[in-house]
Image 1: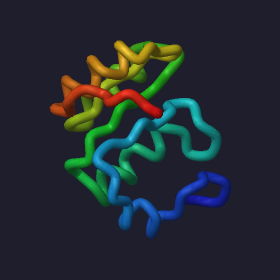
Image 2 (image 1 turned 135 degrees about the vertical axis):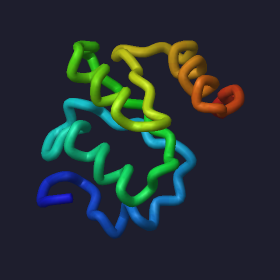
Image 3 (image 1 turned 30 degrees about the horizontal axis):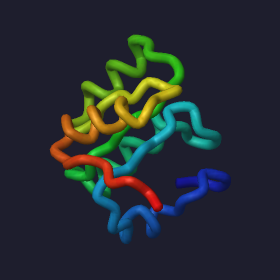
Length: 96
């Protein structure tokens, strides 16, 4: 990933996350540019693609990649829980 994207490719490669929540409209490459890089390095990593604009381009991007689901912003805890369950994760635990 290039300058100003926040993460370098080496960071993504070492990423030990179970899931990524990726903002479609983030600065730099944006979600559309970042998602293929994630997929190249971590093809099985589930991704929730968060966007305030659920349009055809967002739908096409999500459909083009396995284990990617769209998450409409703003989202509630229940919305997040439903998407996590679709990706095979259990219930959210209370924080605190």
